[in-house]
Image 1 (cartoon, rainbow, N blue to C red):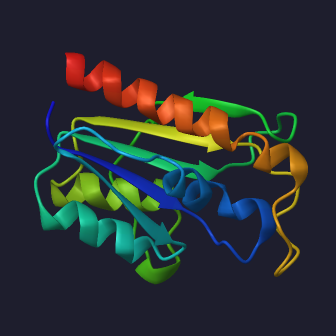
Image 2: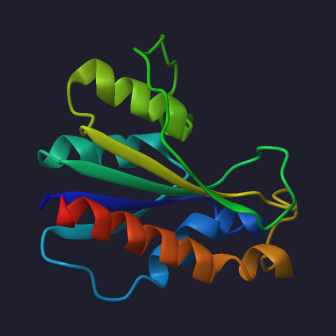
Length: 153
């Protein structure tokens, strides 16, 4: 696999919601054919990245509430289905963006989400909580492991 996008999704102004961008900022050097982008919270930014070039893999890094202990990092293979009408793609969450990409024929064959259970995504302007900030190295490791697995295949 030679064309992979790692997308850090989230709002750095909303405490733990900045997990995705924080992980992407720490990735360091990536193999040829792998690039990273911080898409913020606007779903249209991620969709535009998917439209910009054919990709073989997409790794989305995001804070996700799955009811786990805050700071828990997990790797998910999303079940992406065709999209419903999305009235404002600027506000689309990653699930809806992936559905729109599938409907448009630009969703890569391999998609993984590296997520972290947030503790607080409501406070504005505060740093990440200690448990989520402490999970950044685990998120970085999981992204690198996924890339290594895909590029070895």
